[in-house]
Image (cartoon, rainbow over all chains, first blue to last red; front, side):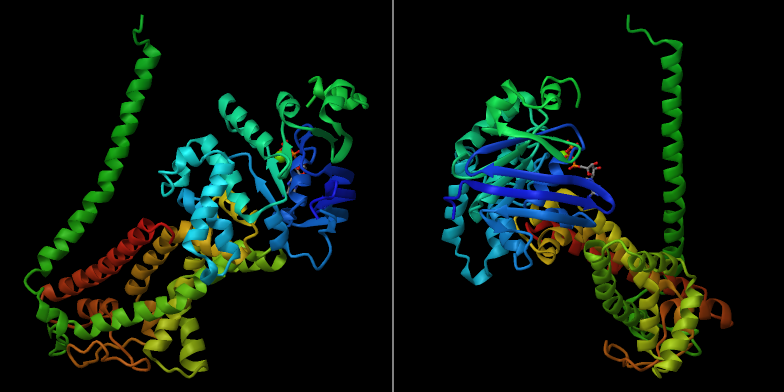
Length: 257
Length: 294
Ligand SMILES: Nc1ncnc2c1ncn2[C@@H]1O[C@H](COP(=O)(O)OP(=O)(O)OP(=O)(O)O)[C@@H](O)[C@H]1O
Ligand SMILES: [Mg+2]
């Protein structure tokens, strides 16, 4: 399944919050294993688009969706889709790191606990999952002696990495990141970007960012959105060097947004 | 350099004044409380003893102890909370976590707010009509407890909702995005992080249930009833009972020639009961908070 060229495909996707249309006919192909940056001015629907990929939008209010979203070829708006399985496969990282107010260890195994009956959870498996996930986000060396410290007492960048690590034991296909660095300082931002690059290939990543330099540094493909529509999508270098649409050019040069 | 200008001096004076007023207000609150409690205890001192707690009132309530009202109050408080807490907390969880904004939830929320403000005498009449007469429970501990439960429930719902709403959305998002169901989110994240607020709301209702006279007067309380001393199961659900609040009212206003210390003793015990229950609940809260999960 993961051999497919595209991890996420949308066809003519529209979304309404009540009467307000936040996405208008979005058609997009997100390539497998790449980092795709989502850019656009505030309120253009980046978060909304991201949230519709694991259908978490539906938890935020009165949402109507039209069109098609395929993840790994599967239509996720189909009635027989289990939201639980979908959200295991498509995890999300937020603007402000949001570790749960429990220990580092419990944060990492939280997903496993939620999805496995208690009788099947073995301490050894959990320990292994924690080490594996923390190694993947290069936190293991820093935290291996602090596994039982409260996650909320960590530094912000460690918290954000932990939030990424929390998704990994569930073996996600796609990781959605909504401005994951906007609460972090420069160094921490670079650390998260490094981490993203090492995770690329194994996971398909989508990152919303307001930072053009970050989009250029970290992404392979880039999507520019405006007022609920996708204006342009392409390889990051192409989009930044030779934008096809005048509005894209204006935005990336900072003339608005 | 660094000299205070007239403006900064004025600001400093205002600051000092504000602080003085705030301290004064706090004292205004604390001193009467200390005085009242101190006065009560001093007046009650001659009569307070273990015997006072564990023996029935005798000689037309002019002597003896307060065993039967004390036990009656405990019954009413415990039973009414056992009824009101689960229903109230679960209703609040539903309203806050599951219910979508609709005319129905708006109506329920409005009803809750209004019910929380209804005077207790109205609850008393409702209890009389619904439980004593319609449900044929008669004047009984059960009918009185149900009435108290009806009275405390809206407040428990309101305070629980507030405690739940104070749990940051970010915690819920973290849960949802690893595929947790709403119930798992509530069970693992929302309740553990709001339990102390929820308990605080319930604790406050303990004092209310113990102190109210009106709702139980028509539904289950009697002026006088002697029960077996020292037996905590002396009341049955369908018995009528004495209560501290009503006993206090009776001996201070209805019975002549009551020894001076007796009403004060009763008041101190009422106060002590409420304090005891509150202390237990606070202990429980600290215990729950100290555990990693829950
Ligand atoms: N739960 C909601 N209910 C109603 N309208 C919403 C909701 N969430 C977002 N919107 C609206 O939908 C539009 C798109 O919002 P969205 O959060 O997706 O924008 P964004 O591109 O992520 O903006 P930002 O860069 O500020 O994060 C905005 O106009 C917003 O007001
Ligand atoms: Mg956003």
